[in-house]
Image: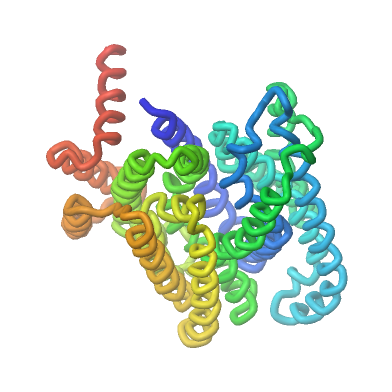
Length: 493
């Protein structure tokens, strides 16, 4: 089993464990414990800090993805990579902090009527920004050291476990809401602290000089990659954060809270994609360095079919259980149904193209991806500005679908034109047709009590997808995993 497959499986397992915690935190406890405004507060704060962190990183993550193979040398402290990364990230944080201090009075006043809680806790945003930027730097560093699973485990599982403890503390009145928000913000530092301890233990947290490796030509590459990396970073979070900010601006924190809960269900589709993305970056970067197109095409196709298969399994499971979802949530969340559908379709589009964005961003045509991202950001903002006033939170989800379809389609076309790479074949169409049939068949099942209905409906959907995967041999990786699991249980029995 190859490195990508091993770590993708591990990362996906940790992510799914995190999903279970996230489901308890967001879908069950939060709507019962908090008002929609209180839920919207933490989600919008995270969204704003995430947007700013992409600007504050000054595009250095893009430098890491493409150029770290040239820094790599453990015995030399990777030629001062960590020193350079901290220097650039700290500079970017200071620039953002100055901007926040200057803008914050206007921001607080502008949100005082529609989003009073956001105005009250606005000064936590710079703290969140610092923690997010630190984690992004360290997680990216672990990723290129082929330790991508660590960040996934800490962010998707451990952090959610900490937040669960905070939710229960608030529920049992051990802390008030102000203390909850403070501890929520501080908890964002936990993953970074653990990574630092891990890197120190492994001898990878070293600050050394970097002047010897930074030649004039290398400096030009770093600057160029950083400039385009800022655009890349903004487009990466455009789909998942700008919409929440704009929903808050047009509809208020309450609808932002409802929208965030609905989006949570739809983003489950991207769990395998996120795990794969972290692991594929160093592999694809090394392949470009060695001009190994065969490896890149292999990663491209396998990531596409595997992500589509798992993504559609999750999407069909969610949509088939839509009634059950809203039997769990309070009535005011019912208008989030269309958000789940449209945002879920946007994520299916993204997942179906596999590692296309990683491949283009690490290639010699990374500048072209930056141009596509500018188009993407423009489409996201314009479509949200048009559709949110007309359709409310459903408009934000439709805007996400439109934006993702255009951006992903153009990226796939670009890889075909520049490198002759293509991820799709007739198997993809087969998976889509079978998914529609399974969804329609699930709709014929009689409705049971809540828990039995969820279990029976979901298990039958998983069984149907498994049968299709085996009969049509849709994914060799998935079949190998299935056979490994089957062999394990045979040995145990």
